[in-house]
Amino acid sequence: MIASGKINVKPLITHRFKLEESIKAFETAATGAGGAIKVMISCE
Image (cartoon, rainbow, N blue to C red; front, top):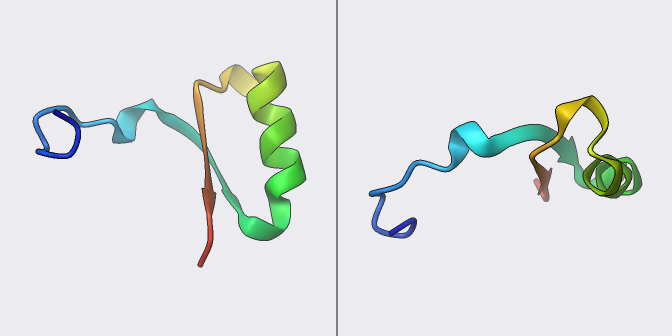
């Protein structure tokens, strides 16, 4: 359903980090800091 676009998951991504910030991203995801629901790491 996600792949077909029937469910929009973008609102669930509460925090975005660059690859260089991956340690902070994992800490945020593990602790739920700042109300984190879903954390995304961008590899751009």
